[in-house]
Length: 363
Ligand SMILES: [Fe+2]
Image (tube, rainbow, N blue to C red; front, side, top):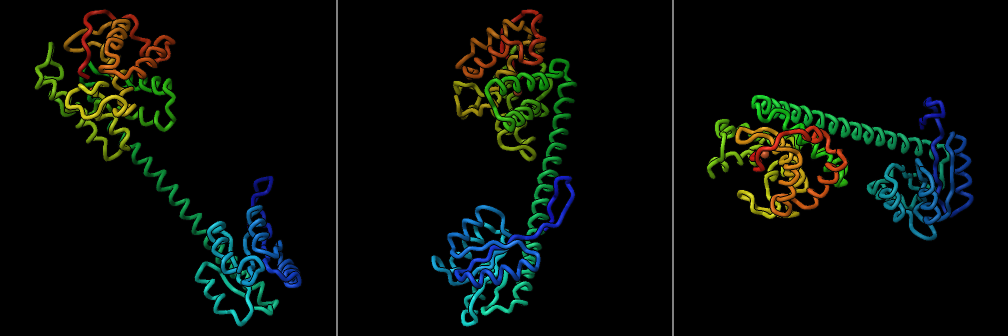
């Protein structure tokens, strides 16, 4: 067996074998013969002792007697194979029980040897079994590497797609003088909020993509309606709001369901009275509840065709006014904390914007 030494170089170390037989004389003979072949040998007289040794340190191969005082070797074999699948097993049996030994081969034993032992045959059998084991380990390692490679490439492909969709979203925003950079700013605020709320690294990563892509569905929205000065008719408002479903449909093939749901629900109202809403309160995905606050704050403090930007203080008042109706109180509470600390990222830059109106957004 090859192992790395202290200098990181690969060196050969002897395989460790375990001889399980209730007869001390047999254990001794096998121990001596197999040691001469360069193996390191351990001994056990019972099944219980054998399991103790297996649990204590890695064993490459077990020479297992079929007849043991506390448990038949035929019963110990499946325990070894399930608990230590990388350990090879050579069954040892009297000639009259060869049929039992061959059954053991079907249950995962690698080979068998007959008593009385032919001491030249034993090392051959052990070597055969260890070669089979080495092949199994190689296949396993190859499969693991392959799985890791596939996982890596899947992630890479997914990131390429996401990057492309993000570029599309940015291009959409850049085309519109009112929304340029909106998603990036929303993303900064959302991530600060997610961190404040103690989200895991995986959830923050989802939140990042959800916030960057939340308005990608605007590609399906009529620009004349989107940029209409003044208030919208209910039909026009309904038309703009299709962007949540369109956005979710665009990203669904390349992102996980959490991100899709975040996009689909980012205009849901906490009290359940948003347009065509099917969930309310904590049933709205947390990412969507975070996005709702981040999105509203950025939209309120930015110029829109239907109103100029309002100040940060007014935006905060507007958001506070909508606690429990449009926004989750827990998320707003976290938002107020990060705002008071000035750790909301780009949101700091809004301090000096001019006051005009306090209407909420249609972003
Ligand atoms: Fe939106």
